[in-house]
Image (cartoon, rainbow, N blue to C red; front, side):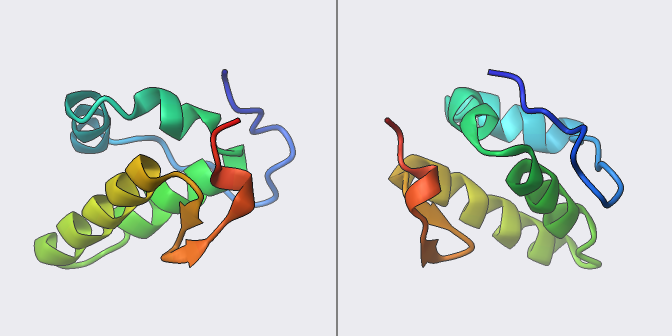
Amino acid sequence: MNADYSSLTRPRHPMPDFVRQALEVRGLMEAYRERPACQQNDDIHCITTAKLRETREKRLSQMLDELEKCGAYLNMRHPLSVKK
């Protein structure tokens, strides 16, 4: 499934290679693509705007862990993120 970014009101953030690679290595690209476009965009923005490498890695790890758990987003229970 490809997300529809047409309704976003804020700038779209392109996925950096290190995020793409992490998703592919953990087999989570499909789960990521199933998230709404606004969540995908927010995840990328959150990860890429971190000033410190350690913070970027922590945020990336959090996103990957949430994708594995299904039903979590930003460390909160999120029914829209549950696989159907």
